[in-house]
Image (cartoon, rainbow, N blue to C red; front, side, top):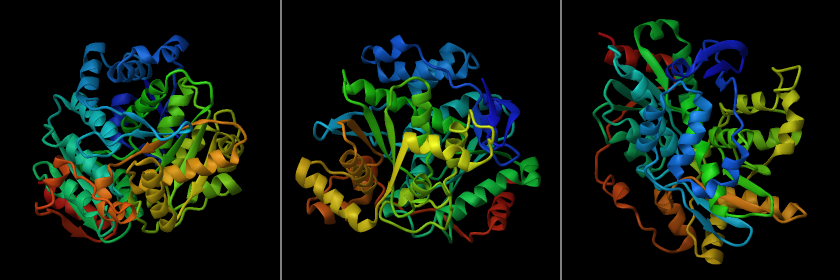
Length: 446
């Protein structure tokens, strides 16, 4: 398998190099040189395959023999140890529950696969690998859980102080061992910018082996494509077009869906569902991409004002365009494939209440945004469709908001409840890159 930079299609690297480097030197993002189209019989017969078998078939096709079959199957077995059930709300609306993993968030799929893949590639290395990750909520907990006690790998998580829920914070600050948390006086965008700058710092990269666990790392995106196939499988025989409504922050989840579509999954349309940080919906409507500082909301994992994976989305829709560097060149095909909607907190709270009252289903704030976007899309469409909302986190992670909206208690799963009384272990730092660099050099360079 070879991958190129979104800023230079001639700069090809191997899967191992892309996974460990995280970012190319030119500050682009890695993309597969070939996104293979799966055999149509495989798509037709998805119902005959387990979730693990689906993940194995997809990754084997993408990796093109770079990992021996037995080793790849072992990676899949270690990664996909929990289900992604599809729950029907009504004839037109379904919810794909992606919160059954250890950290109760969809990012467990990508984080556990990445941890297994990196562990495989890192075997035999003498120097430890340092993983830097920025989180707006759920990524940190998933990465912390996925890499906990992984030999030869240490993880540094940057998160915005006061902008993640209490239980989300406990998930990434209470493990210890090889997991380190930096509490940044700023926004998620500040955290992400600090991580990106570290990868471009030649001096630091000569001192430490660095990699990333954000969705900027291609090994996070590939396994996220698995559950699109798993969701489609659970629909059974469908006549109506299938659309996915995707709560979106850094847009890795939607990009993974685009990968699934390119591999042959017959997805009719994508819906980019955001909160008031609606940079991408605005672009889809106007053709102008305007990044800006993120604003805090109750759907905090989507509080992103400059989503990294937008560059991958642009790249996917510019494949046949002469001007491969312009967002304008991607606008027409992208707005045809994706609709975008943004909603404020008041609407989100109302949606949590509506879903509970109408369907007796408890949905988290991110899923509620996805519900609103699907509802808006289906209202505007003339024909029927089968809509799938990606429910990205367990409602107990946002217990105060959910209970206030439903007026019913939310049960907290034991693996989350046990964290409530643990003391967090984090280091406060400023939102300047120098603070991150100083911390890394003081702690990891002898």
